[in-house]
Amino acid sequence: MSELETDIDSLYSRVDEMKKRMMAHSNEEIDKLKQQIIVLANEEARRIVDKAKAEADAESADITKQAEKGLAGIKKNIDSSFDRAVDNIVKTVLGDTSAQAQKADKPSKPKKLTAEGKPAN
Image (cartoon, rainbow, N blue to C red; front, side, top):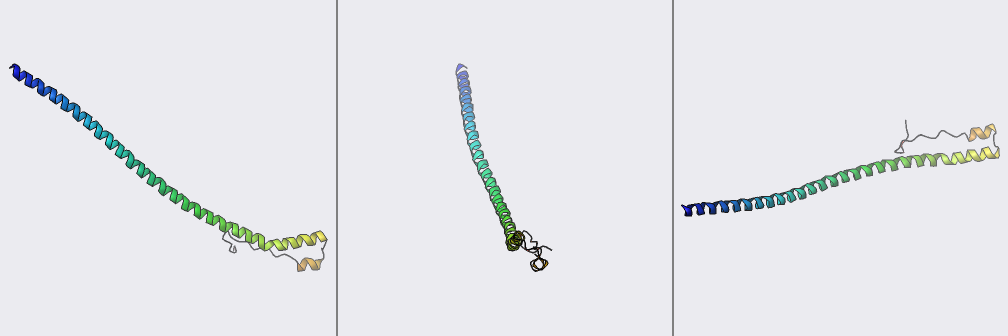
């Protein structure tokens, strides 16, 4: 009987040792899986951020292109009316107010252009 009790105690201690090993192994596996999940999540987040950045860069380029077209239209309007404005100012400063000079030099209305530089309707 005593031998049987010793064997049973030995089995209990082995079972306890196996439980401890299994818990340690489970914890190690959990830590490994956690690290893998973190790596995967970081990669996915990086992909999402890169995609969003690319989309924002493309949208920014479009906005810049539209702004440049608008600026070109404004410059064109300025260039088309600048000479007439200078002539009118010079004539006014020189005192040329005769009706004939006013008719001959009557400035036409500057054409309104859209942001793309096309005539507005």
